[in-house]
Each structure stands twice: as C-alpha cells, then as structure tokens.
Image (cartoon, rainbow, N blue to C red; front, side, top):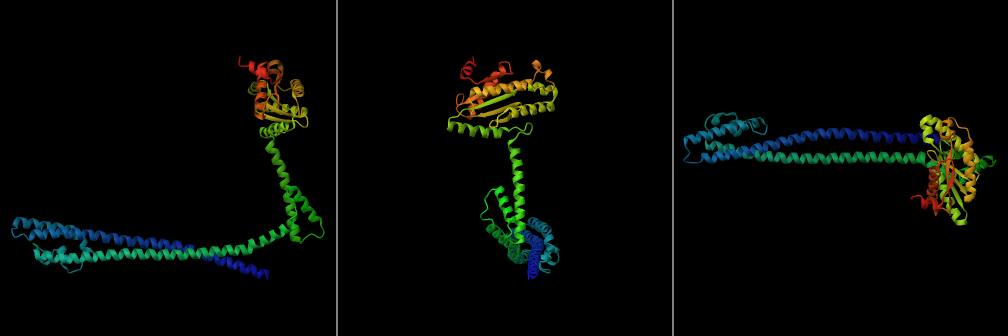
Length: 426
C-alpha cells in the first residue's frame, strides 16, 4: 500500500515537472516567434507609412504644377519649366513605381514609365487623371496602414492570451508540486513533529536538561517505538554536542587569545555588574591597572615573539596570585586590569604590592637589557566609592594613578588621590 502511494506520488511529481517544463519551453519559443512576427509586421507598417508620405508629397507637387498649367497666360518658357518639374517629380517618385500597390497599366504606372501620352509634354487633362488615381492610391494606402496597425494590436492580444495561459499552466504545475511536496514530505514531518512535541512536552528548555531527559527516556523499558527511540537518541547526542561547543564558544568569547585572561569585553561586563552590586550592598570594590615598564622598547629590541612570551608569563603570575573572587584581564596592549570585589584601598594596595614584587623578582629572558636590569610593572589603584562615582570614572582614576606611577619613576604602586589630581596641572 505504501509502495503504491509512493509510486503514485512520484508519477504526479513527474507529470507536474514535465508540464511546467513544456510550458516554459513553449513560452520561450512563442516569445521568439512573436518577436520575429512583430518585427516583420512593424517593418511592413513603416514601409506603408513612408510610401504614404511620398504619395502625399508627390500629390502636393502635382497639384501645384496643375494649377500653373491652368493659367491661360502661361508662356512656352514657363510650360517648359513645369514639364521639367514633372520630369524631376517622376524621377524622385519612380522608385515607388515598383510597389505592388501601384496598379500596372494605370495612369501613374504609365507616367512613371514615360509611355504613351506621358512620353513627351504632359497636358493638364493627363495630369488630372494622374491626380485622380493618386488620390485613390493615397486612400488605399491609408486603409492598409490602419489594417496593419489593427493586425499588430490583435496579434499582441493573442500573444498576451497565450502567455497568460502558459503562466496559468506553470502556476498550476507549481501549485501541484507544492501540494505533492506537502503531502509526501511536509505532512509526514509535521506528524512526526507533533509526536515529538507530545513526547517532550514536559522536557525543560535548557540543552543540558533536554539531553538528560532524552537519556532517561532511552533507559525506560516502556519507551516508545524504535523510530522515536532513534530520534530521541539523536536529539540527546545533538544536545550534548551543542552543550560542549557552547562551552568552547563561551571561553573563546570571554578569553584573550595570547594570555588566556579575561578580555576587555568580559572585564567591562563584570565591572559594571560589580559596581552596581557594591552600590546596592554598600561594599567597596577596587581596580588595579597594570602596565609593563618599557615594554615597547623590549618589543622593538627582541621582537614580538619574545614580547608575547613576557605577556603570557606575567598573565600567568597575575592568575596565580589572584584570589578566586578576583577578575584578572588583559586590558589591551601591555596593560592588564584586576578587579577586586569587596576589597578596600588598603587590602588592594597590599595585593598589588605583592604582585609587583613577584614580577620584579621573576627572571625574564633578555631583562638585563632593560633599565635597571629588570623587567618591572607599574600599578595604579582606585577604589569605589572613595575614588569614583561610577564604573567609568573608576577606570579613569585607576588609569590616572597608573600615569602617576609611571611619572614617579616606574616599578611602583600608587593609589588614586584627589589632592594629587588637583596638584597635577600645576
């Protein structure tokens, strides 16, 4: 039964595809044919319009000549000039004598060929006959132009109907494809999704708990059908993979690549949260800004690879000396920052001084080439709420203290003081 349904579905799908393909091909071929047909029609119409203009111009010239021939005082010289003008008009209009619409054996045809009464001087009566036939020719040409325009319009309407039918055919074929796809693909998937939703309606939203719940279902001997067990097992494995990758992504997002300390983004988030928490509970919070002394000179002299080793080693010392609650980070370049939650000025000075001494005593490669023969750090401290009103000013004031440590000779710890800041401009 299922095989018959599948075969029927494939046949329906193939029919819709073939019908759509045929409709598209017909549209392409029909459009190409219509383009050629319209081009020929438009060219014929343009030729008729040009012929009509020539007829009108020729008639105007002949009427002018006839009016002069009717003058009773016309001299022989003037008559000769008028006959010359007729010859010129005939020569100018002779090319149109080849058109089928000019009746063979008629007055115009005889005039253009210069036969019979038109072989020599043309009388006014003969010219009148030419004008009569010329008027009839102008009228028939005007009708031909009108019929040609209507023919083009009708053919355009037929083409639009043809295209509309083909578009309807394509739309029907596409709709049939959608319905067939829904019946044979989306509908079964929707039914399966409903079964999974019913099965997992009590599962929590977290990936970890979803994986645990899926594992519990797999261990249950009364679990659903093998298909659902297979899907549940796949979901559990997928959840575990997602959880593991999320942990790695979280680490990449918050860690500095060279030092493995927290990056500035994560440090700033912690700083803002901890300042607000301290404001709420009335705790102190301190910030240490650390800068490696003469690090640019070290980098320029011994290269960036050696500089990166120094950064990594100092970062390791900072990480080892920090408490569990502290937030060490790489602030940027050769600068580090440490956030000391629930820590006042005196305690932060004590921690910073110990850290400075350990780094100063650490044997670094090539440090003998540095001023004083050591690679050292300068540290600036600021404490909230004594030295700052918010997280932004806490960073600024710690940075000012670091600047004072640099200006005072480097390799020292200086805590921010308002009176020192007031003296600084002088």
